[in-house]
Image 1: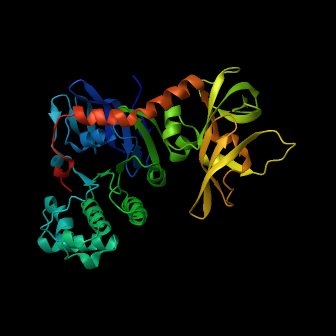
Image 2: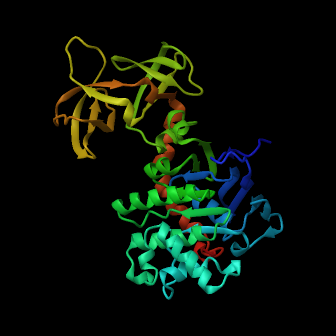
Image 3: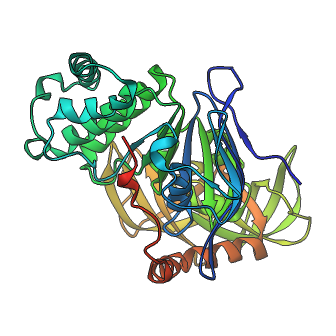
Length: 406
């Protein structure tokens, strides 16, 4: 039996706050979590990234205690909270949460909402208010301490929720897609606040999202989850550069795919692949053998555009669309041979209908066996339907996450 995957934090203590072993959760005949193993060290910021229906929310609910495990054991800060014939309620697990819909008490002011999280510390009302206002100051809204949630904007309410989660200094902070209800400009601002405040307070965070940009910008450890299994865990740079499977590569961002045949080596870790009329260099991923058909999964930052030269050999394509975004241009390119690339960035706009040369950095050109890559593509194409089916068959079991204490 393999040991649980370990996520090391930045404090260097090596002391685990969360230990999960073989976590399993089923609803009737539907298995949503399938033997999840996880060890999260103190002060680490773990992001669980996965599509709808992948099991990430169920995993968070099981950690919070609003869902009962079907099997497995769970320990938080050295204390067993779930296992065979054992289930501690959320309020007894000594954790905090930040919710996507804020979950503030409407009849309490912002300061009272934050101070509510301090009740279990047996503090006087003045001390609770002092600490609450101090935490509201840290999130930049101390002047709104006497306002009720209905008078606050979405971004202000989420700051109150963040202050409430952090003020109690619980050993574990759970975040349930807290940015999903915010506008784009507020999302970035609150994301920075969550990251900086969590790390300044040395909180241990488990954060779930389906947004790739959000995941990579927040995590010091990233776990990709699908069908109730954690497919890969590691630093975000490692997951991006060396994905463990075609599914992980697809879900963490591609410009597109090409197919070809391995024709030889090209140096340490690299192979030569014949794709149509062009020969490309690519990074050989696990399972690739000489002479076999492969699919090349292209990271967006590995593709660049240039001018077509009559004497040059290589990939060429036709610009189908272009759009201006964040100081550069994103292009849609149809490669000769039938493939389409999206999100190809350039500082110059290429005209629609124009032919371009396509250069590919081998470090971002990931070669997987074609059979494995096609299976991952098919799986991704059916995820939306599976998510609908999953919701339809899930009973109303367990308490809502918002019933957990702040």
